[in-house]
Image 1 (tube, rainbow, N blue to C red):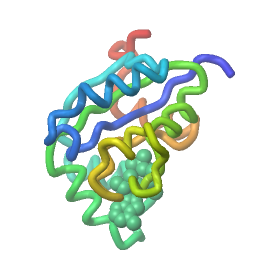
Image 2: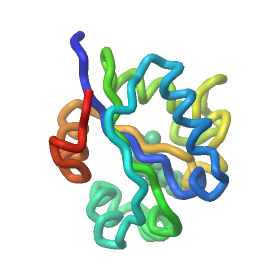
Image 3: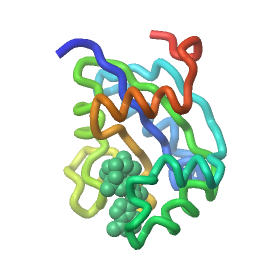
Image 4: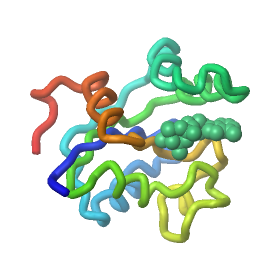
Length: 140
Ligand code: ATP
Ligand code: MG
């Protein structure tokens, strides 16, 4: 597996608690490099589009409200097998099911307010990165 990039969001529950640095420390400890990041307030449209795959799920409107409830940090992470590696260190969606040592086990508040997003495939990573960053903002 060669060097790969994935897309990450540090969610509003984490910016609110001022723990973005602690999460970045766990990202860097895994070997991943933060090659782009910025703090933004997602618009309702951005959040709806980003989670459009979940539009029919009962939690969709709550999820959109949550993701627009405060600032988020959008990031590009780079490293060996980055997509899978980041999913591993994030832990399960529901923090009560997340493995010991994972970001969500340590920091997530609930299944919704679960501190981080990570792309679930290489193809989605490419699309999500392109949605939030232009090439010149990503520096390896
Ligand atoms: P993400 O896409 O944010 O990386 P994920 O891939 O682990 O998370 P998904 O199934 O894609 O999980 O769900 C997207 C997000 O929707 C979750 O991270 C969480 O914030 C929220 N969510 C998922 N399931 C539920 C649920 N049952 N109740 C409330 N919110 C949920
Ligand atoms: Mg997902």
